[in-house]
Amino acid sequence: MASSIPKTSWADDVDELEPKNEDFVDENGIRVVIEYSLNDEGKKVKITRKIKRTLQKSIVEHAVAERKKWAKFGAEKGREAGPDRATTTVGENVTLKLSAGNKAGESEAAPEDNLKQQLNKAGAGKVVCRLCKGGHFTAKCPYKDTLGGLETADAGTGAGDDDSHEPLSLPSLGAPAGGKYVPPSMRGPGGTRTAGPPGGGNRDDLPTLRVTNISEDTQENDLRDLFSRFGRVARVYIGRDRETGAGKGFSFVSFEDRAAAQKAIDKVHGMGYDNLILSVQWSRECLLF
Image (cartoon, rainbow, N blue to C red; front, top):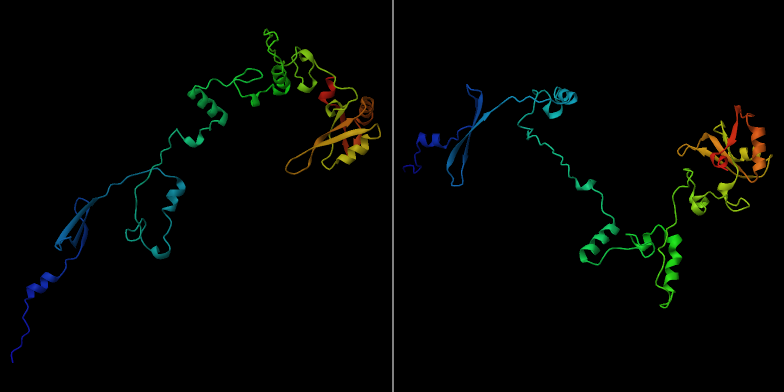
């Protein structure tokens, strides 16, 4: 019985062989990559890519240039320098441009300013303080402690009173005529200095001595024992470092009696204490009296 196997031509076998991809560099230095693939219609197409390389020089840091000379390790050990296309994808350089108008650096407006702007846009009028008639809220008035009682006094006046009132004069908070600064608690009428209440109840009115050239190990109790022999000591303060807590070499000793403080200066100034020579003087506040 004759065989029914169909005979095939050797040309059909040649057509079924797939061509190999090609990758070479031509005489002009252009790299040519030829690939074969099937398109959407199932037809075999040939794709040719030509790549031209250009040498571009750039100035980089010394550390970056040194890293490029390092020997490869791991899976890339023993290969040539430079990125390998099989394992590395070289992307484009991305430059970062910083704009001057950064919203994060702008300061936010205060809630009080925003409320003022909303009132002005709505036509509600200008914000006026009920005490000093300034352009701020009454709760934010700097003279509310001084003029606070005037608002209730004006509210209690009847309709039959005389309408002619003299304008309110704000208290003078400036410096006195002498040009020296005086704390508000010590200012009298017209900005003059007052000696304070009798009896020396305020701690700022106490006669205070400045003691310098003391050791770092000196404690408050040590100075209190040293100066208490001349009179009653009100308080002792030693200047210390915030981080280490060690003394800075100076202190302030306050007495209740000025005569006792003067006696302490005469006796302790220039005396040796803890291998050092103490220096005792009046503090600046006491020199003003």
